[in-house]
Length: 137
Image (cartoon, rainbow, N blue to C red; front, top):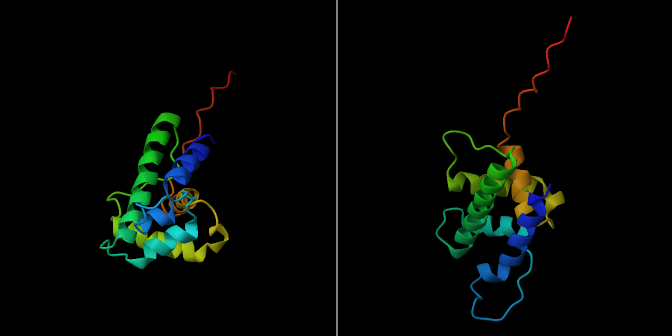
């Protein structure tokens, strides 16, 4: 899939744990954000009152918006949110639980792990089978 490398590059270049900790005035090299680092930030303050929670929620929202844009252009989405949509706090808490249960992805890029989480937590309904041409008798 071509969306994953582009999404991975975008988030890998823009997200780092150092930025989330407020070191923007220092010259630091942005490091790719891992699933375990994002899950730690999301678990630190699930109420949304801290900079870590804000960063966590920003990564989740950004990944979701990117997914919407890419799936609108390329067809089938990776995940489908239910109606009514879950709250940000519900998604954040669910991601932390999923990450704890799926430690095999700890070193994976956070955005890739978010897509795995979303696909397993909010699966899309199956696509109908393509119509078969009528048989001639």
